[in-house]
Length: 114
Length: 116
Image 1: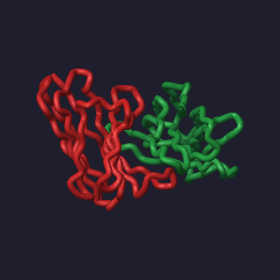
Image 2: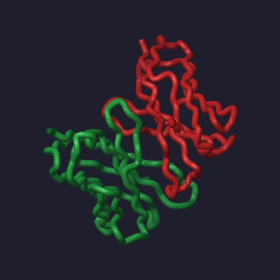
Image 3: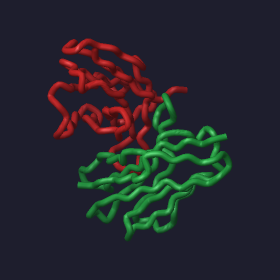
C-alpha cells in the first residue's frame, strides 16, 4: 500500500562520514524531489529529477548529490555531513511538475550527525 | 520571489469545534496554485486541499475548506468538527502555474493541537 518509501527512517552518521538516503516509489511518477526540513522549519527543496533530468536548486550545497538509477529509486548522497546537515529529509514524487499534480511525500529520514 | 507567511506558530482547538488557520502570500504572478499540507507527528505529509487561483469558488474537501481572497493574497484553512486526528503541523504552500517554476514554497507552519 505504501507509495513513497524512505529507508532508513532514522540514520546516524559521524561528522564527515558519507551517508546515503534512499527513496523508492510505486506510483511510476516522472518527478522525484528531495527536501530538507530542519526542526520547526518549512521543507526546503534541494533538487528534483524529471525522469533522468537532474535539477539542482541554486542554494543547495555541493555537499549534497543525488542519483536516480531508474524510475522507482532516487538516492540522496551527503558527501561530508556537517552538524548543520542534521535534519529530516523528505522525498516526494509527482506525475509532472505542474501544481495541477499532487506531490506525494514519504515519511522522511531523520538524519543525526554526531 | 514568492513568500508564504503563516502568522500563527501554534493553535489549539477543542474536539468538535471549528478552527481557522491563516496564510498570506506574496507574488506578482496571476496564475498559481495554493495548497494546505498536513504533517502529523512522525507521519508523512499529505495534501489537505488545493486551490487554483483562477477559480473564484473556494475549494472544499469534507470538513476542510478554504477562504481564498486573491486581492488580499490570503488563503486561510477552516477545519470544521475538529477531530483528534487533525492534530498536526499544517503548512501553507504556493506554486506558480506553468513556466519553469516548479517549486513548492512553504510557509513555516502552524502546529495545531486538538484537545479532547
